[in-house]
Image (tube, rainbow, N blue to C red; front, top):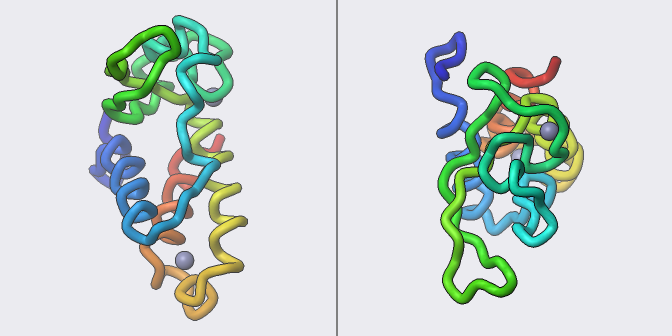
Length: 129
Ligand SMILES: [Zn+2]
Ligand SMILES: [Zn+2]
């Protein structure tokens, strides 16, 4: 899926996660839940990884990329491709912005200066209802 500004949203989420990692910021709000608590549908990307709910469609799903996660009772990591709904991504990015912006000098200086603030804001703008 390509959004109106021609950018695939999957790299948008992934590059934001990479920027957060680089900055040493653990943004819990965008972290994936543990596999153990998830339903089969959530694990295989049929429903939202965060809230479950209705089955996602190609239009509503936001792929979150490939991940390797532990599952209890399984010795090797499980490869999975979680997907999320637009509402959860927008809500979580918004909460992330509220957590991040007050602690960030770049964000306080001038809006749009900070790649993390900008990335989160972009997710909110693209995916909120
Ligand atoms: Zn959701
Ligand atoms: Zn910032």
